[in-house]
Amino acid sequence: MHDINDLELRGIPGVFIASDQFIDAADSQSTSLGFPAVARVFTPHPIQDRTDDEMLTYADVAFDQIVDSLTL
Image (cartoon, rainbow, N blue to C red; front, side, top):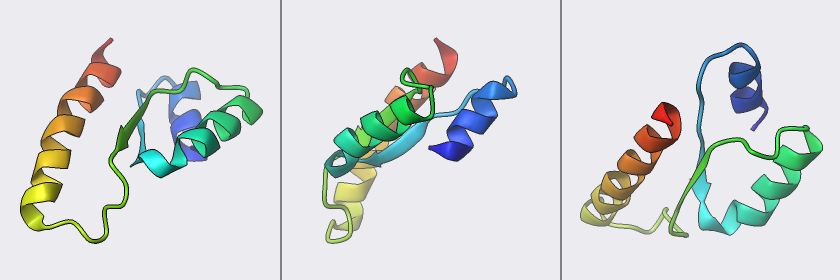
């Protein structure tokens, strides 16, 4: 979150990406950093036990959300 905040402050678009287990933590941290609207994309949790095919599906879904966040 600190890195995304730093990038955005320098005019470089960034997106925070994490599994959905961290939604509340991302909200709290971005608010405490004074950057509550930081772009973020969440994948299903957990990811460590996913098969390659499942991870590709997660990545396909996340990719479109990431591109949208960077280009809006």
